[in-house]
Image 1 (tube, rainbow, N blue to C red):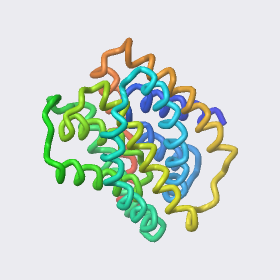
Image 2: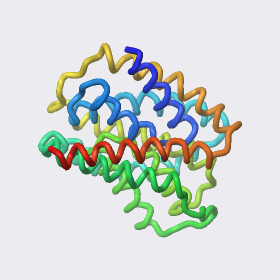
Image 3: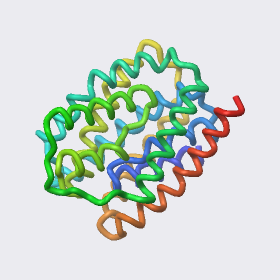
Image 4: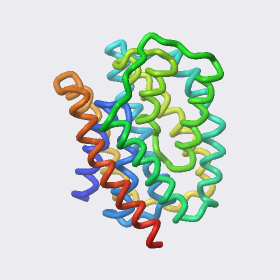
Length: 245
């Protein structure tokens, strides 16, 4: 219970402050500290991310940092890949899921530790936006991650949003992809331990509100480096686990 509450608070802080990164932390915690299988951890992560991102979205929308039309179009491109990915996930070997997740977590860590130069105000072509949205949806469906750590840079680099708008809009995309992937898994998902998932999600929701306030007080680069270091350690652990298996 204490582990679930502490991990949930960290996941919520990440989603609220950075618009992503929470689910990448949630999955390894669920697997290695709370005893979930990779498949069950991905499903539980989607539930937690959906509840947390929807809650954080409300606060960012109230601050005027959500571009609803842009977010809806970006999310729409990822809905079908998210659904297909959710169906495929139950049929993939757990070793492959673990290795795939380690690769995604490692990539996310590098992006957080060494963020690329922003291209704010630069808009790319429609196919580029659709391709980015579809790719993010597929990652969400297969691995159970919200994809916010990829969505925020894509909204800045591909769509041309400013950082605060990208963080708020990312939560809309994350929530939509997580909902579709969760519905696709509903018939094949393993039973979940709600005594763990419920407090985890509750702490994450509360953490998301604090994360939004934290983002206004602490440098975004500092927050990214902290979460990036944690993600890099988690990626190394999961890659070692997949190799040993």
